[in-house]
Image (cartoon, rainbow, N blue to C red; front, side, top):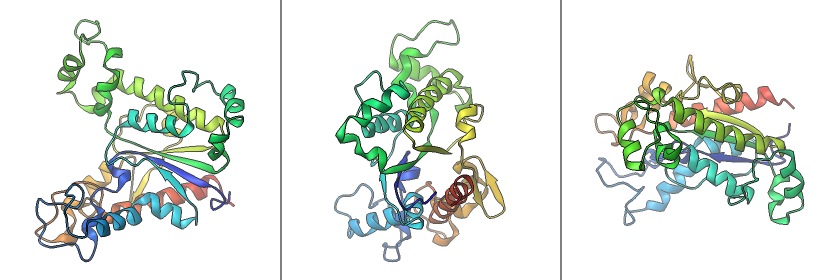
Length: 276
């Protein structure tokens, strides 16, 4: 496949956003303080560091590698439900209950001029985030594991699950996984390839997602998740990156080096899956 002929879609949380990469700009003021270019509107030269961040994040590196273009979810943070909502908006059917009807959707979209993007994009990279962030969006579908009844309020449901490990959210994982699979199959039915990268391993037992997962390789280690890479290698997390010496930013997002490894892992997978 010639990846330069059409574009990429990227969605995810702050990991895909490239949060904190502006700290690596050569002119970023030292020593680091609690003031940060991300949220401080009056931060000196804020736009310089924000532009640097966008250019250095893995999605932009993938696009530049193939001399292509992209559309990316623009939020700083997010969850998998937010990604799904954004993808529905990309499709133009965010309020259409029939959006997941597979082949029936194809003819509808082909007859809708505003969805001409369908012939412009070939690949969706979906970065999954922390599963507990989705809880507030589907609490009505979650049963109390103590008595098997549904919760009476969002607050009650979230409080009950507050102390649970991510992997223990079995109901939540299955609910969100089903929604991810539905929207992904819609894109695949429309001719757009879907791949996943992960912050955590909560979807490790979901075959559809795992079959499309890109593992991340950094140095001699290949891992299922970005978090595992950051745990194993100090230079892959901004807040522990030795490049900053004894005064690192108070920021524990993927580092510049980590984004480079994610980018290279994506390129290797794409070239392996769809050789020229």
